[in-house]
Length: 316
Ligand code: SER
Image 1 (cartoon, rainbow, N blue to C red):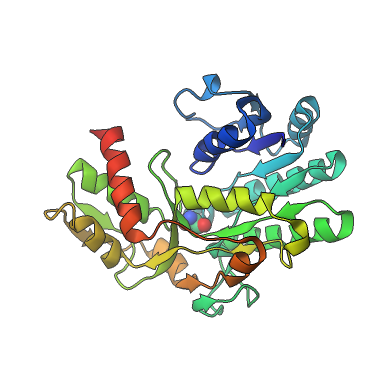
Image 2 (cartoon, protein in one colour; image 1 turned 180 degrees about the vertical axis):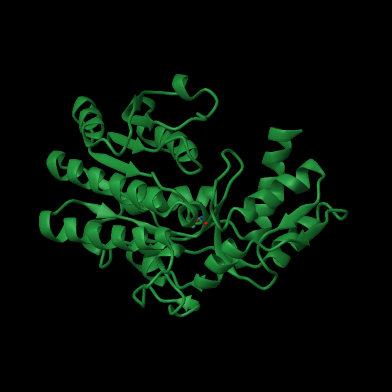
């Protein structure tokens, strides 16, 4: 049975990953590291927690030692658009947390999962069916931290046998906790507006395609890569994973089937648009499928149906 520490457990991914991990490995075997509020409802009653500023390595080490942790999920990051506004913060948080988790893992013999992203690609990466191994020259701070994360995680594996593994997440769509400061956030915000009966102002131009994924598939990816048979892994950091790619018009049409009066207008955010333009349209995830059996369950239509169902419960 694994003993897991989630560093950054209160964000968009962590708040749902913690619930899923506890359902698999047991409530007391998943320690939720928290630092920045707000905290999810019922957070402190749901299982063991530890206050961890991930830039303080001794706080991570203490939690690992005290709880005999063998697996660290490092989910701390400043998303792409916010990191472009505050580059030093984006760099310090992304790299600081990563290096601290890797060094603690090296000392206490832990496996480490740190998400990479479609942001690890750049303007001269092939845009369609982006291969697993290809040009990665991102022009955003967020992307640079993600490429460095991939490289240094592989380095810790090769050099010190730290069991590092990860996936390149697309934009993640979810109903429990809002993302913040990401380029792909529009694909979450649009559902909130539809369910709340408001118009949606879209910051990304029609015709801009990006990979997206519904949270249950993202959780499967994060858990299944850490459970994969290491003998079958040719790659480690990080695997392309994909489930759907769409532009704003496609998600709008999908929502309009349930809300025919829903209206979307455009007010392009130049920063987010330039980031989106530098990212791939859709990734080729065949290596993840072959090496550890990755397969998504949610396409756009299933995602829309479930998001609307969940948001009606949450908001109405
Ligand atoms: N969702 C992230 C962002 O938009 C990409 O990984 O920054």
